[in-house]
Length: 460
Image (cartoon, rainbow, N blue to C red; front, top):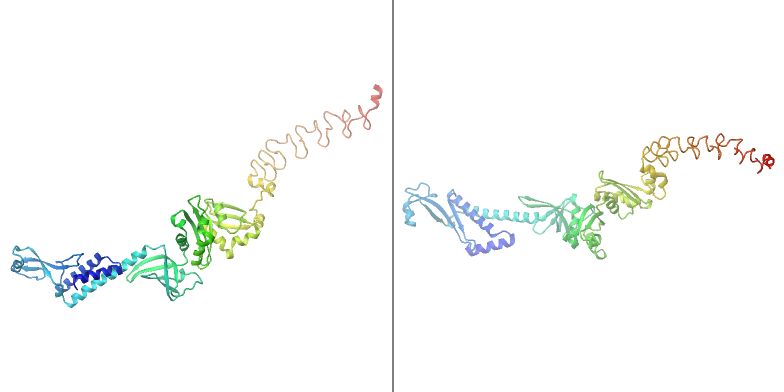
C-alpha cells in the first residue's frame, strides 16, 4: 500500500468510525514495533517515525557500533558503520532503516491484528463516550425484536435492552416502531457499551416536558416534584420563576397541545399538572386535585397531614384503588389521612367554626385548669369558674356572687336582700316593719290589703 492509499484509508475510517487519525497512526506505529519484535526477537531498540500529513513512515533499529558483532539486532560493526557514514566511531548509535516488506508472513499478520484490535477498541470507546453522555436523558429508538420478555431497541450505532421490569404493563411493541426511552445506565464491556433503558421511570416524563415545553427547557418553569404510576397516571408540581408566566398553562399549551403530545407518547397515560407551593397544606390541597378539599392540617415535622373533603368527594380524593391519594403522598412527601366531612365530625377531627363555635371553641383553645374552663365559660381553678360565672377557688370565692341565685351568701347574704324574695326577712326591713315578706307593705304603717291603715285614720 502506498502512502497515498494509506492516507485515504485512514480518512475513511475517521469519518465512518469517528476515530481520530492520530489514534490510527498510533495503532500503525505499535503494529510496526510488534512486527519488528516478531521478526528480530526484540523491539527495545526499534524507533518508528510517521508523517501525519503524508502518512510516510520509516522504521529504524538503533544499533551500537562495536568491533565484533555478537547481537546483530542491537550491534553493528565499525566497518559497516563507516560505510553508512564515515563519522561513526566505536560506541556510537547508528539508525539502520528496516524495510517492512522484509517482515515475514507471521509478523505481518500480527501487525495487522494489532491495527484491527486498536480500531475495535477505539470504536467501542467512542460509542461508550457518545451514549454515556446521554445517560439520564431521553433517546429515540427503533424496536427490533423480543428476546424472551426483553426488547432489543436499536439506537443507531448500538443496541439497547428494555428489560421486563422497565416496561409499562400491557404495553406491546411492534418491530420497526419508534419509541422514546429514558437511558438508565451505560456500561463498558468487551463487546461494546451495554445500554439499559426504561419506559417506566418518572424522569422520562420530566425529560419529555423539557423537550416539548420551551419554558421548562429554558428554566423559566421548573418541575419541582413528580410522582408516577407508569401507564396509568402521573402528577407533576410546577413553579414559575417569572410572575408573568403561568406554569400550569405553559405546560398544558394552547388547547392542551403540549401535554397531549406527551400523553400520546406515553400511550394515553393521564397527567395532572399542579402548582407548587412552599406551604405544605396548600401543596397537599393542590396535589389532591381534581378533588375539592375543605381543610388541611399539616405537620411539617412529622411529615403527616389530615385532610377533610366533602362527603361526595371522598372517593375522588382517594382515587381508584387509592391511586390519587398515593400519588399525592409521593409528590408531597407527606403521609396523608383523608376523611369525609361526616367521618371527621364523628371522630372530632373537624371543627365547623360557624356551627360548632360555642360547643368546641373553649375546649380546643384553652386548658381546664388554666385561664378558661372546660365545661363553662371560665376555669374552675383559675381566674374564673367552671360552673358559674365566677370561680369558687379563684378571684371570687363565696364572695360577691352566688351559684344558685343572683347574689351570694357573702356580702348580701341574709342581709340587705333576701335569697327567696326581693328583700330580706331578718334584715334592715323586718317582718313587722316597714316592708313585708308576703306583701308590698306591712300592717303597721301601710295596710296589707289597702293603701291606708287604722293608724292613719287616727292621725287624721
